[in-house]
Image (cartoon, rainbow, N blue to C red; front, side):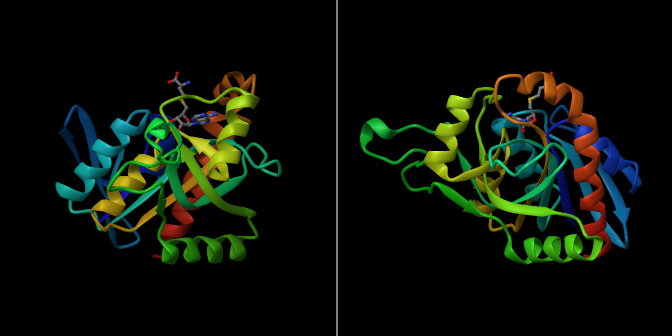
Length: 227
Ligand code: SAH
């Protein structure tokens, strides 16, 4: 069973259109779609926005639906200068930028007995690189930072870039990374850029959410064909 996770309805819908839905299960005030694609069993859901919702849904996919891998598809704000709206990025690692226990001498993002960065699965990242190469699609990779805030300021964006060396920003990946790493489940994080995470990002986001979601969904489907 492969778990396909998104945060928002707009991110999941273009994926649902491509798979053969077998059953829809109502659970935890959400819908989990059991589907087939390319001979593989999938469980798909959108968690709703934010780290808590994403953690809950990832955990349910793993514990209840026995997902052996979690693949995330969605949109993100750009941090790296060469990322344009619609570009694709995969995470090498994810991090929670809003964890702050620095007053106790810990580095930003660190929780005692846990860690700052959660590694994404190298095998899935390698597959993504191969798919991108075959289809001649530009695919960036880097650290993706998450927090329960929509970032729309140059100042905050630059702080996240400098503190975590992050390339893109969103609101779920760091939490899913924490869950999957704790439960030893391979995790793949794919995002298409929807905005610049600077002033005006909210307007860009609303304009490009649908289009960028489709870019990410399309790439994920191409990957599933090769799995
Ligand atoms: N307009 C939406 C809310 C979007 S929140 C509504 O009204 O429902 C932004 C979502 O896209 C989150 O799921 C997050 O993961 C991602 N995202 C895209 N750009 C972002 C940014 N600049 N900062 C934080 N998250 C961003």
